[in-house]
Length: 184
Image 1 (cartoon, rainbow, N blue to C red):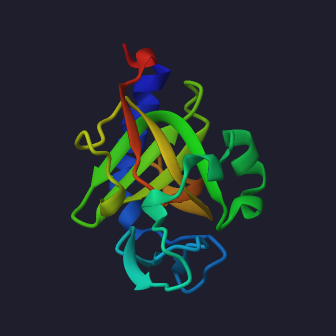
Image 2 (cartoon, rainbow, N blue to C red):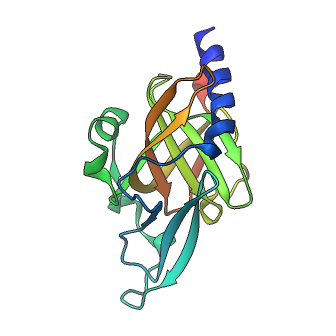
Image 3 (cartoon, rainbow, N blue to C red):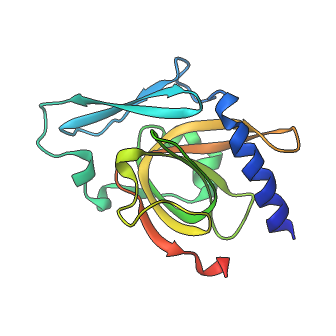
């Protein structure tokens, strides 16, 4: 019952997300990846999404999608929620179950929870270039996210209160492991 209520409240909340601002340290609503890659992605906050723009960088012949997964630090919800600034612009990876998903032409916003705990939400901005190769992201899918910390994001909940969660922006293709076993 609790999962159903939380899921319903988050679904409505995510729909209202586009009107909310970002509380990360980038006051001008833009950020950029710190990877040394052939193409660097920069992000601009607009209409509730981080939109990517690619910039050429001649300092390396490796693109961010070719970045080895061993270069990403695995983090738990507790780590990124307690000290989000410690992970800002650092390559991190998390795995969790999709609680809510909102698609657009520019990408997808996902609320991801870890360890079947609806209080351990992480918001993930998935760029359209980083979508899984096996199709769209669906609720209850288990995802492995590769990206970088981007501070926190506030959004209004369905009950009228606000919630602040860690924000991750992808810089490598998301791995969709299919429907989570705990979703059955």
